[in-house]
Figure 1 (tube, rainbow, N blue to C red):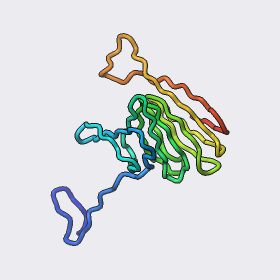
Figure 2 (cartoon, rainbow, N blue to C red):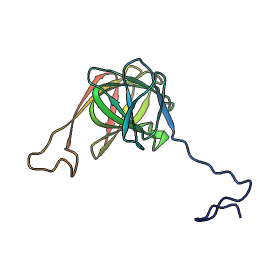
Figure 3 (tube, rainbow, N blue to C red):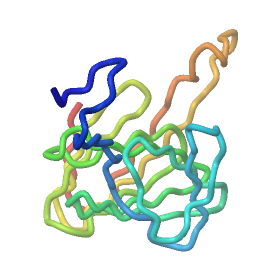
Figure 4 (cartoon, helix red, strand yellow):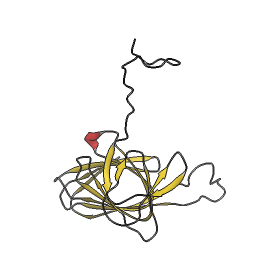
Length: 174
């Protein structure tokens, strides 16, 4: 029997497969970009051309503008305008990458195909965005405003978003 069972080691010759996180893009300019090491709780600086993995929390420091080139077949470039924090995921390849903008500003540019898709998570709301032309550009800003009298350790402050279609054709769905 080559199946893994609790308390039993794999049969001789069986190969254990550990799923690697999906590579969603690369860090493509010389600005400072940090990644959170979940195991230690420490932020580490990413080297130039570092691969960006799914579920990796990224942080752009104030006055820096790191650029991410998403390689998931999307042809989308993402400029983080610090301070900003995001998490990239890929739940459904047909919808393109998922961008969870925790706070800060990002600029999304369509640099590849004529039409590209991505999902945008702002707080607990998810949107599907279609960049409908090669020159489509979308700017998004998320701020969090503390509600007086609420416990900031119990839950994050509500997200407030400003969204600007700066050029090209865009479609937005909830």
